[in-house]
Each structure stands twice: as structure tokens, then as C-alpha cells.
Length: 155
Image (spheres, rainbow, N blue to C red):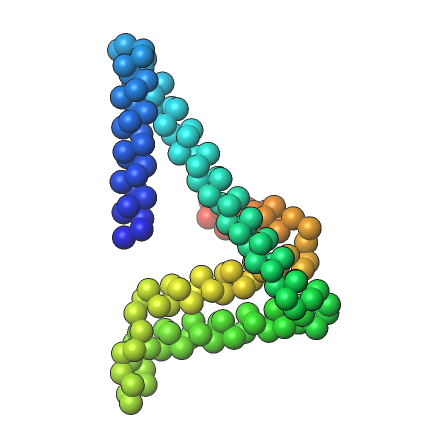
């Protein structure tokens, strides 16, 4: 549902930008320029949203650092927290397929998705312990993985 709403918002933003610019610049030139501007604005908004995610994680890290400290024991606990979260993903998945006959189906795909998000957030929090720029490190790692996959796909 969220993707559907996001797509509707993007279409509305693109349509409004297109209408406004087309009214300022007559003809096909105005429409083409409007499409380019709308795409650029939407791309910038998506980049800002990703940067915003890392800013939120930074605040979570600061909060945890203040509450729990920053020593090696706390680092180990944050890494162990990943194991707990992965276990919750497994539990939710088992609940979606009704693997436990005594309990039956107890979870939905949304529950699994929520637990996967908890794993990602927990990993992002832990990542702050090992690099000064976690957002940049994460982006570089994703690009490295994509490059390896794309090389394998080429003939």
C-alpha cells in the first residue's frame, strides 16, 4: 500500500510541476522541461529521504550511547542484538506458514517485513561502531555487490 501511495504522490507532483512549467513555457518545450524538472525533484527527494534515514539512525546511536555507554561490552551487546532480531524474523516466518501445528498461522508477511526492518535498523546502529561514515560505507558496499553481480551476468 505504501508503494501505491508513494507512486500516486510522485504522479501528482510530476503532473503539478508539468502543468506549472507548461503554463510558463508554451508548447512541447515546456512539457519536456517540466518532465525533466519533476524527475530531478523526485530524485532529490528520494536521496534526501535516504540521508534522512541515516540521520535518524545517528540519533538512535547517540541515544543508545548516552544510555548504555560506548565500550567494548556495549559493542558486543549491539552485535548480539542482531542475533535476537534475526531469530524474530525466523519466528515470524514460521508463523506465516503455520509450521507449528499447535499454533497454526500466527503471523503475516507484514510481520516478517517488520522484523526484517528491525534487523536492518539494528545492523545500521551496530555499523556506526566500525566506520566514521556508515551511510557512505553502506552505499559503497551495495555498489560493490551490484558490480560483482553485474559482472557475472555479462556474457
